[in-house]
Image (cartoon, rainbow, N blue to C red; front, side, top):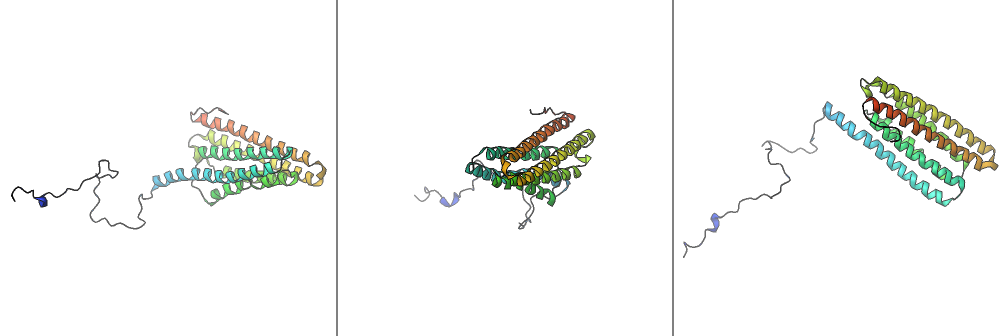
Length: 255
């Protein structure tokens, strides 16, 4: 009777593994491997540093600009519907197009230019995009709105100058024509921003000296902003199309 009983002690359960394992068991870790807190998973070298810079810098700039513009857009919508009127709606449309123009410019430059970001590169998106927020509080006020937009285009002028200064031919390799086209584009946009800043500054001063014609000076400022955005977008589309064609990429303007 005892011989017929199974020997339960001899049936030890073998360790089993799940049918679908997420762990790679082909690599055998060294026996003397001691885990270190904060140990690196990838050592830094030339290629890794370049790859990380390419991945982080453009995404970081676009993210920061998007966040700031999201705040500016919310404030713009809130203040637009709180003060209905022809001048308010016209100024709101002009500001909305500025938001799109700034985002479009950063998106275009992140494709054409890449470098290791510095503190100045981190500061510029906050400075330029941050200047888009206060005009939302000046809707209907021709003097303050025009003067603040004059400050915005002045800041844009400085940002364009910095981009030109820190974009050497190395960004385009042997394609020196592409570098020349980009710098011609940047100089044209600097001139456009300077003219717009001067015109808006004058309209703001005229609105302050002539308070009886706020609508006229306000609409003059709106017209200037709309013309400036149109010139920037059109000039950038043509310039970017030429640069892409040099590298064999089909990108027609306004495609």
